[in-house]
Image (cartoon, rainbow, N blue to C red; front, side):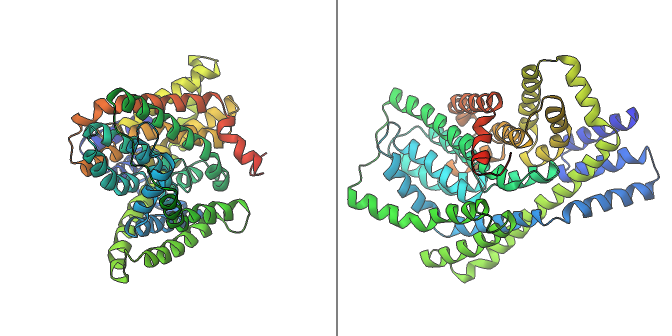
Length: 433
C-alpha cells in the first residue's frame, strides 16, 4: 500500500512538471497506482467504470447549462448595464470607479458564475474608464482581478456544484445560499482596500448621476438582476432543482440577449462551441479526479492524512490553520477545479468527523481559500485573464495586488473561525438543520 502512495505522488508530480494537462496527469497517476495492486485489465476497467459512473449524475447537468448561460450573458450586453447600475450605487464613494469595478464584478459573477468571464467582461470595460480617469493601471487591474473571484462564492457557482459532487452530495441549494454573506463580505473588504488606496492617491470620484439618470439605469439593469431572483429564488422556494434552474437561466439569458439586441442568432454557433469546449474540459477533469479519489480511498490516503494531522495537535484551530495553509500552497500551483476534486475527499473526513465541522461550512472555506490561488502566479487563471485584458505584465500587477491578498485571507480567517457567517442563511431558509 505504501508503494502505491509513493507511485501516485511521484507520478503525478512528474507529469505536472513535464507539462502534461492536469486531467491526464490525474488519470495516468491513478492508473499507475492501481496497477501495483491488481492486473492491467482490472485497473483499466476500474478506472473507466469509475469515470463513467462519476459523470452519470443529474447534478452535473447544471455545469454545461450555467456555462452556456454565462457565455450568453457575456455576449449579450449585460456587463455594461451592470456597470452603469454599479455607478449609481457606489460611484460617488471614495474610490469611485474602483468601487464600481468591484460591485460590477460581484453582480456579473453572481449571474454568470465564472471568475474568468467576470474578469474579462468587466475588466475590458472598466480598465479603459479607469485609465481615462488617471487611475494607476496596475491598481486598476488588481481591483478587477481580485473582485472577479467573488462570483465563485456568490451563487450560482459551478465550482460549488463540483464541490457538492466531490463531497458526496452536499445540498447545492444550501451551498448556494451559504455563499452569499462570505462573498459579499469579501467584496466589502476589497472595497475597503480600494478606498484606502484611492484616498491616499487622491483618485477622483465617478461622475454624479442625476436622479432621472439613476432611475433609468436601474430600470435598464432590472432584467439582468432578475435572473438572480429567478434562479436562486426558485431553488429556495423548491420550485425547481439547481439543475433545472440552470436550464431556466439559459433560456432567460438567451431571451435577454436578443431583447438587448447585442447578440444575434448568427452568434450562437460560436457560443455553443465555446460552451462545449469548456464543458468537455471540466467534465473530463471531474471524471479523472473521481477516479483518483477512488484510488486514494483504496490506498487509505484520507485516513493516513487524518492521522497525520491529528498527530500534529489536538487543537482544532491548529488543524484548521494547517489545512488552510496547505490549501493556500496548493492553490498557487493547481487550478481550483482539480484542487476541489482532489482535496475534498482528503480533508472533509478529517474536519467533519474529528472537528465536527459542517460540510457546507468547509465547502465555503475551501472555495474562499482556493480563490486566492486563482490570482496568484504561476497558475492563477484569473490573474492571467485580468493581465491580458489590461495588457499589462504580471510584474506590474503583483505589488498592487498584495493588499487585496491580505483582505481576502482576512475574510477566509473570519469565515473559518465563525461558522455562522456561512451557515446562518441556509438555516434561516430551512435548507439545513
